[in-house]
Image (tube, rainbow, N blue to C red):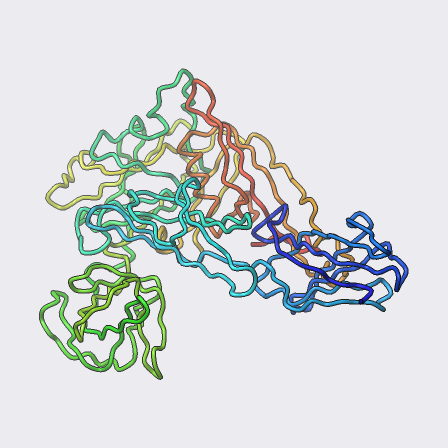
Length: 561
């Protein structure tokens, strides 16, 4: 029997930061009949990287001593990484006695790759979630939810009502990650009219008013029945601030107007920045069915059609290749079947690449007519506009922006507010309040909510400066391996306490803090937990707290994403 013998290892949920850490439980024995008992016993966890993680077993970890054989049970938090945990090494302080277990089971890292939504003809959405899970470590069982209450094991969520959602994905080791997804109120494809969408991710939220009077009475902040009305719960900006906005529409008329107390002050220039409508490719492809999955490929035969889907304009010239616009996560339309999603692109034989689809039935015909939307999920155009706060603007202004998204025949240029479709929350120049400055955007332009990654800006009132909360029980910061310390990232968590917010500001904060690019008062942050709010009794205000984290290098004061 060896002096040191490892009995077992197992990966468990970490006591803190379960998305970045796991708790490794290790049981081993030390035979004092062969060597003197040691006070401290080093344990090294190796990830096949230059830096190992070092923890120690002590007399506090002893669970039994029988016949001179001491049994230790050691449980410590160590990092979850994309690279596998390759070995666990228990050694004496003298280095004379060791035992190593190769490829112990750890817990893998994972991420949300993409979340897409398709709205069907029933005006209900289907949300499909793609995740990237490391194949090493303990198999993960991921669950999915759009309300953080009801979770399902299926990565396809059906029957979703239109709206902006926070998608929650969690594993069985305490890690939950989020991403935005929007379910449009109109069918995603094949409908080229009666569609518009203004996301809550804009600098200032908008409300759809359906041609009701365009004034602040029709904004969520004022639609309340409360004893105490916090009428100053409005958005505020400094002189020369540029406020950016974006919306989607396939209407003929797309206009924006600046109001002050319900009266038009000026029309704002709206720029169309995409040209997406009716761009599609229709061609015959070969179906290939295997193990419950339908694949589609080209073999240099079949017809290519006009946009009408009936007029043949040529022959399919692709032999083994695919359109470069057919991407994983995109949606295509199969004749007589409907919309399906491309879930992978795979090589089914030498030089023959195929679309792996979400359709799970075979097609007996030799060809299937496939419609590829060349700008996937964009049967609309994207529009942007901005407003710059003037140094001459006074604090008594009560600005709002009205959107008129309508058809030519329904638009009255002499009285545009009659056709108003969306109205923003009230905003005004600064009123000398203490405010947090928020700047955010989707920097990679890879979410369905955004099209061009515009940078948005707003301010929210602060009660006092954020409170710093140091991490507890984090062994990776207390290791005595100097090289590891120099290269470690330190995560600091802050709690932001906001002055009274309206309900729409509270909701807006939740969306803002989930963006991949988020600056608060000039510092990059990442949302640690969903902001919490408590309604003030008899009023329309909420006390809100948000827990956010910032990372920095152990050997530097620099903060970064």
